[in-house]
Length: 375
Image (cartoon, rainbow, N blue to C red; front, side):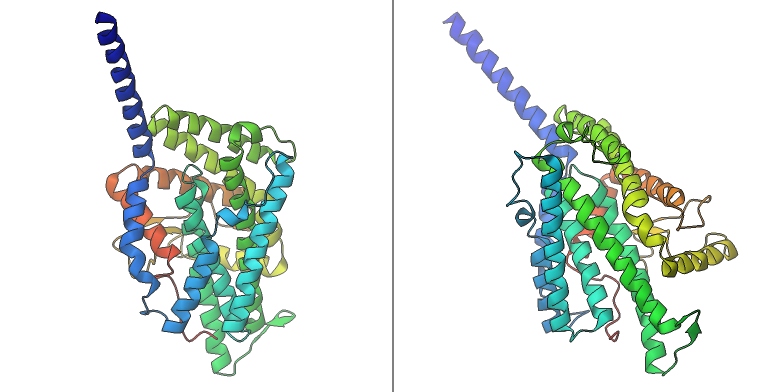
């Protein structure tokens, strides 16, 4: 009888201890909060305040493609080489992006501007889907807001182009014209966004399917990516131990390394193109002229729309030492500042809710940057 009592007590204590650990792990990742927000925002699938009913239905189709995350790795044989798995996931991402472009071309009658904006919507929706499905991989949590800032720039550039077209104005600019340069720059930017999505999205999926401890020594990865996976493994160990603060800080450091990988190896070829170098020089002139108070690119708004949410969101200003976005090291400084700031914001209940709420709104394409008369 005494043995039964002690044995029963042992199992009860063990059960309670495990329950407590599980509750702690869940609390590190606000899954219930995200699920509640998704349910509350489900109405946005029918919202037509920014779009016609037909266009909203079209965007819902794009969202469905972006949220089909499982399909990206369903045909991947993870028992083979990790690099082969990565390449297959990348190919699946590319196929999704090509499908989105085909659908946009049909729906918008081959409008190049609308195709660019649809591709950007796909990128944003994909980051939202990835962050909700794989929240342990932090990169996408800042990535969606950085990509949304790019959308703001795309909308402004394409709006300016449309005004010039509507007024039959086409000024010469170097060997081209302003109209062509604005469109070409937008197309280069969106291809850069898609390249980052396919790379970082594939790395995030690999992290979940294979595990950071198995990936961190892969020699085909860049040094920054390997270091990112080393830190990612430590972050997930802290998560399993229920150490939320350590988990978030290590997760942030891992994201910074992945950010450096993206900026140096994936995005630098984009910034080396002549049209982007011209844009970077123009941005530098504006930054220096207005002493960082006004920038085209570099600031990151944590929210859905900095015009309508100026008093609600968080503006992460471009660091004082940064003025040339064509320089990879300076862009890495922007990423470091962004991830560290986001980490601080999410450690408060209000900040955590706002980040998730804004991310999911962007994932529904609700209240995001848009000018309906762009053609």
